[in-house]
Amino acid sequence: MAKVTLEVNGKQVSKEVPDHTLLSVFLRDNLNLTGTHVGCDSSQCGACVVHVDGKSIKSCSTLAVDIEGSKVTTIEGLAKDGKLHPMQEAFKKTHGLQCGYCTPGMVMSAVDLLQNKKNPSDQEIREWLEGNICRCTGYQNIVAAVKEAAGKM
Amino acid sequence: MKTFSYHSPKDVKEASKLASSSSMFLAGGMTSIPSMKLGMATYKDVIDLKKIKKLSGIKVSSKTVTIGATTKHAEVAASKDVQKAIPALAKLAGNIGDAQVRNRGTIGGSISNNDPSACYPSACMALNAVIHTNERKIEANKFFKGMFETALKKGEIVEAVEFQIPEKADYQKHPNPASRYAIVGVFVAKHKDEVNVAVTGAKSCVYIDKDLSKKLSSDFSSSAIEGIELDDSEMNSDMHASAEYRANLVSLYAKKAVEAC
Image (cartoon, rainbow over all chains, first blue to last red; front, side):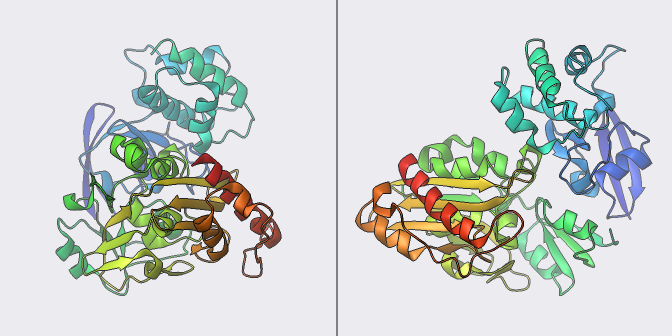
């Protein structure tokens, strides 16, 4: 067992968990933050993407104990004071989702892209989202959403 | 995933001491954690190397670029020093897997795993890299032994990889469309006295293509290797690409790399 202390969405949390606990499991089962989805569970689909110390990573392939002391942001941490984050707003506006399963990972990944590059081209957006798979084939509108958000972040 | 004990040693000596026949060194975990989850590998102890500060970082001298074992792909790709000294190496790192894999995956992890379709081993071979471990220095051509096999012994830890700065170099890869690993990847490096063409993805282990290297050493132009037919008898054949197709990709991407130099 390991004591894992993290700052999750601005709040300090501390839990005793088995050493092999994945970050995705820690967030969903221990903190009840079920916005982070587990899709393929083999680090291919990107539904589980969260930010650790500001960078997007796949939480299904990261041990919770490995990131001890880090700051984690999940999809639940994006909206501020009941107001959607510009990326969430853009996904809503451009219909960048259908079933919504991949959406939390898409949004977290896209936010990281815009942190690195303010005005990415369509090609850069598509390349960045290579690690996020949407099986409703909604990529056109997802790319449109990221472009829409780019002007507002 | 089966249970294990997690260790996070502060120095290499302590990490090496913890190693046993049922332990694994953990760096980015981008291969090892999915392997453990799938039940393909189980360990009693997982020894995380990321808290060992001296294993991370990039140093550039007039002749070499040295990258610490736990330096992440995204850091190598974004490094102005690497972009200036060996742009092909920064480009290679920036095209490994996807953005999230590049934010976690490390050079030491990649070469210690020696996946036959990993990108970094080709750079090590073409750039005459020297692998620094806690025990010795190993030349790249003696480090990569076979499929998922290296010269590393139990408890031996890769500390850094030292690449020779070439006159020119380029890396071209034919990525798997879903996972971005190299179905074939070709790293061409022109040094003062020789040209090395290293190939990954085509066979069970990274290798130097002697025919292509020889031809390009005497005439560094894409026309020198135009129409060359490579022996495909040891090449991989799977649902993604037949051996014959891979052989064609190797010469095609070698040409592309020379043209991009």
